[in-house]
Image (cartoon, rainbow, N blue to C red; front, side):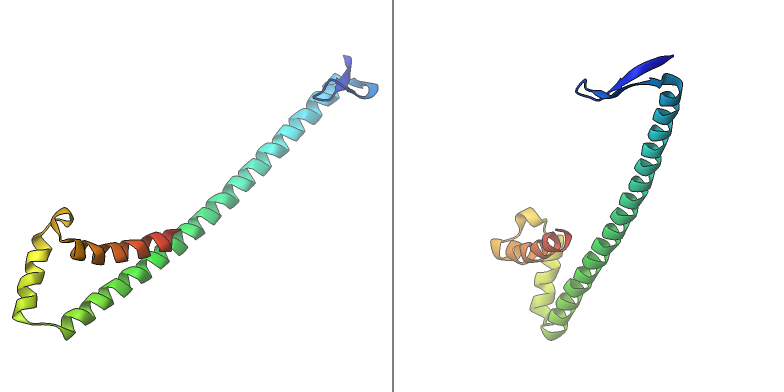
Length: 118
């Protein structure tokens, strides 16, 4: 069977009659190429996402280490019985019940996390 081929706007592509069977084969080939490219692009995007995820994980791990080192340094330089008692109370206090000053300290580190993941 022969037919004319038209573009998406209804314009004839050269006005020539083409063999529909060969057009179907060409269409199948084009679809297979698109699917191959789609799979290739998907794989590349997944790899890029994994790399970005790994990079984000490393930034967050570095930040966690920085926070731990900051806190440990502070403890070692300020260890008194009064501070140990205060820290014990803070450990048992939910965030929502902390003072605004204490929340401010936590917010400082939360902002660093937001910066690391953006």
